[in-house]
Length: 77
Image 1 (cartoon, rainbow, N blue to C red):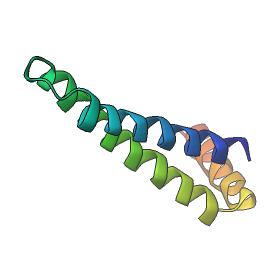
Image 2: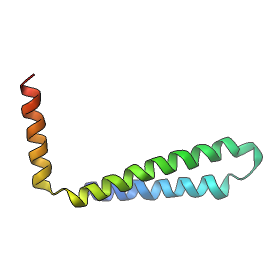
Image 3: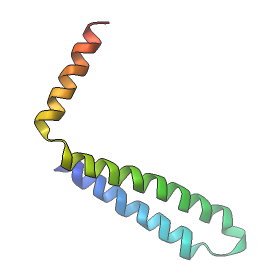
């Protein structure tokens, strides 16, 4: 549950960045900061929402099985 809360809080923070970039930093001197906020906000929002959806789709047992496969693969090297 902690991961889902983490992904959700990340999405909320990035929505705030998008809002700041779009509506707060509107002066011509702050155009670069506005673009940076919008760009970073949208990218991290997409990653946060994607990870949140992934956490709903993949169950804990499947996640443990994937980790075990990765460990076995690493031991083989």
